Image (cartoon, rainbow, N blue to C red):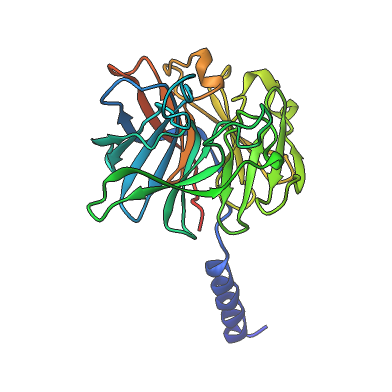
Length: 296
């Protein structure tokens, strides 16, 4: 082989190597990306976190305590949504009146959307259940106005599920309580599309070690799903077949409580958020990066 031909082939392989995408890798140790100290006591139970790149704001949703029996506002929950800037500084709170379970930014609608308790009507039909969008005014402030997107749908399964949204396929991933099962939901259908079984054995975990209702959809190819392993202080990452692809350890000094099994966990802006109740006066949401890649 001549020197010129060898050089040309080497250059070709080098150019191909440069255009190949880097493979995603779960970080062995999670890295803090942002801290969001709560500025006031949660009205109910702190649930999830959403980030709007359009407004460069974080939205922390409370959940629980639905309508008070005998109240004139029978469809109104006392749960607030709290707003913070991109650095975690508190800006405001609003009372949309929903019993929030999951909150997320939908790039297809450019809106913050929230999924309520009992979205599936598994606990019997109640008013104010389903998926709603929250209104943000021209000043970037959250108002108390909401708009109904879909009403209850049995395809979500458990009443307390905290689903995550895949904007590309417009499907939801809804973890089922006391199990390693995740239902894939097309909101246009009344039954689940499919079911994913997470291989917890490969992670050395059991279903009662992990967050009972929450599953994160990361959008990272090959690392699409993540759950919080409360008992082992780690984030477990799986692919869409339920195969374990990595474990990212949380700081050993992080204090997690039994409530972290049921609330105080979310995913947004490329980070897993965990509520640390004993950090700060009213608790702090910690955003952890668990991969060296971000969703496209």
